[in-house]
Length: 269
Length: 309
Image (cartoon, rainbow over all chains, first blue to last red; front, top):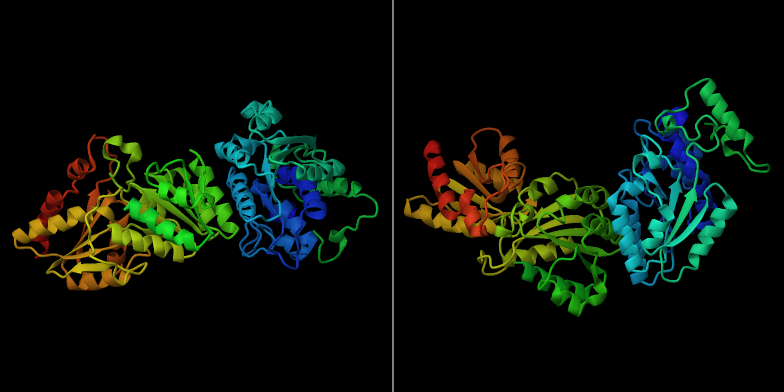
């Protein structure tokens, strides 16, 4: 997809992919036949630059056809680089400027509580995004109003735009910061599907605190030459060796018995 | 004006439980009637306006009509991108409310003077911008933005504004209201500066000049029809706003006039002349210093009309 679109942020898309996959597949109550279903769970991707991950999840879930993924970034496409809801069934909220999603999600969760509604609000943030002050404004408010129906997942890939987070603006001690803000903190391997599944379910048991799942991930996960390399925040896999190697490595990791819908003619990327 | 806003909003919110008021920890002595009578529909989001606006957008996405309240520039400039991306782009039913347009907070200083808000809010697509001039217009505007689904901006004075209208007329969003007819010159006023404008008219009358007078409680969408008609009928259009003359009400009027063909009026924009207010003083004092007192308005109109006889 990023190869066809010549799109950026493949490193972030790969780091968040497992989180998005488990969330859409196993956890969130969403319905491709009724995207605005009243009691659906809400999912906001606050790190909107990884929008491709959401579009893929929605397409694979059946909100629209996988063939449309080829139009990502294209002139006249519905699928912009940063995730946008306009005309795209299943996208809950448009983002792209960092530090907005958690506040919006908190407002949604707060409104749901006011009306005694049972759905949950999930928001996926980046770790670098936590440089934004508004994230912590929202963290204060979510705790104050005891929004236990709000689940934040941090795609903690330890890298941001120019360098590793630690070399940029240190977030350490990261989990302690969230604890100090009053949150229920769950620290996991963000590529372990069982751990993600367990964390999402554990979050349900939080009685009066919002939950943050700190999902420790690897930027560029799954493609050896992209892992932990900041270049792939910007570069797309070029035709030839880069693309071929990337695809070969990903295909090697497809678990047995999983249908690869991109092998069909329509879905071939 | 702000008390009228709160009283009107209480009435609305009593009838519609989906109406919610969020404040950025401001409104001491003002919002009390709301939070005492409707505690379940009131939220203090703390001193964190960026979060407040996004939070309001989130609530609106869930079906609430959210009035987000603060003073001066805090509800607008401080949270501008949140208004743009989270409210307007999503057509979220958020009503951004600022108390203290212009120099209302006088001696508190430039940080509290909202003098670019109209320009900035007007530049955002899908945002309706209202600046009522008295308590009657404020009551109408509060009801009007409640009924107008989508993102709106309401710019209020602090209170004590002189009455423009005896009673609410047939006001509509996007329509100016004629206060009086006149000759050769028409003055367009928006917001609480009307008090100075009406006194300026009295001063001019003594000089033998009798301008027509309109109030514009809506800045966006601007009333193109009234502007066009006035541009044909009068020699001089004067716009007055307690705001920077760049990009705000006077600019909106000028944009319409500029695109007209044939004979048309000259436009004189009166407002803050692209400055920050660094001088200390009351609202009345600052209006005079920066050329918006009745006397200064009258003098500018008097000078300018000599050229358009």
